[in-house]
Picture 1 (cartoon, rainbow, N blue to C red):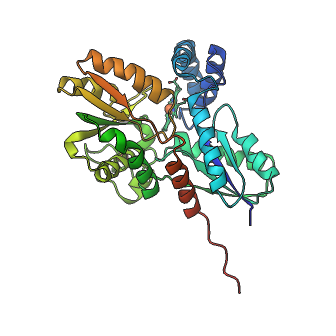
Picture 2 (picture 1 turned 90 degrees about the vertical axis):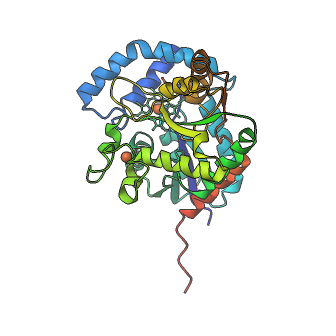
Picture 3 (picture 1 turned 120 degrees about the vertical axis):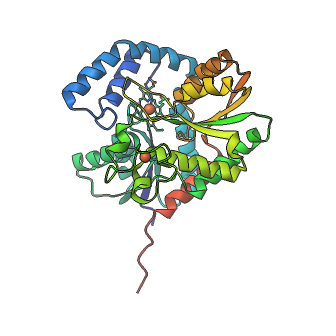
Length: 345
Ligand SMILES: C=CC1=C(C)c2cc3[nH]c(cc4nc(cc5[nH]c(cc1n2)c(C)c5CCC(=O)O)C(CCC(=O)O)=C4C)c(C)c3C=C
Ligand SMILES: [Fe+2]
Ligand SMILES: [Fe+2]
């Protein structure tokens, strides 16, 4: 059967670096109740306040990292999709972005037009968060309801501890880790703290002690983004043969005044420089594709900050992007979720 479509979903980027396009993207993104999880009137007010200055600032940042053929995040995700297509033997493959283009609606309808009866949606986020994974799945469900589609929708679960993902990550970073460095900072995208606690089944674990994420198991680990990030980092470091003193974890991209999960990447960059780290490696395994948050926040601003604080060099390790190893690993991860066909009588 060739009727099981695969829909790869990433976050999305503005259509261009023009302030109006950045504003429209940020408005769509931040008005998503899974991203700013406040009642509509409060969310509208807060987002309108953010939209006074942020679009121009972000447009300038996008300008510095934009490629001739578009946003790095979208271009790389499209290349990954092109690499996955010939490897997926079960049906057609399309790429969608949760915000802006290509929309989930357009890409899901394109799969249906190609005659699929089942779709596996693969949110391209190793660690689970409502603000990334849940919103992508709910958008696909909305499209299915809106167009009365009669397809079965399955989901690729978070793959933060899956050997396929970790092996690809170790393979892609090994050449850089073989070179001389003082410390590896594993910087994940941050989240407001309340996004962890509201998800936890009994609200007895998350943020209740300094090492709660290191000890998380079962249902807590299933829902705690921070614990999943720490698991990814620990497993990666063990597999890459790093000593505990050679690496640490931090969380980047804080927005607004609410408390986000710690330690913050910005603080760690200063601390590491003050502790005498000269050659710093930084990787960001919450992203499978390089984007504004890696190229600009870490590779440009982070680097300047680290050097100003006394460091000598910051090397940004590329994300998995469209590596052949990663495309194969992603297909294997997706195939693991396919239900076996019923046995013939
Ligand atoms: C890796 C997973 C991500 C989580 C979790 C996440 C949560 C989250 N993000 C914001 C606010 C912004 N994020 C922005 C960019 C951005 N975020 C992710 C991924 C996650 N976000 C990616 C891949 C990107 C890059 C997009 C690109 O075009 O390259 C931005 C826009 C850029 C900027 O202005 O800084 C914002 C804003 C919140 C509030 C949040 C959780 C609540
Ligand atoms: Fe984000
Ligand atoms: Fe937690």
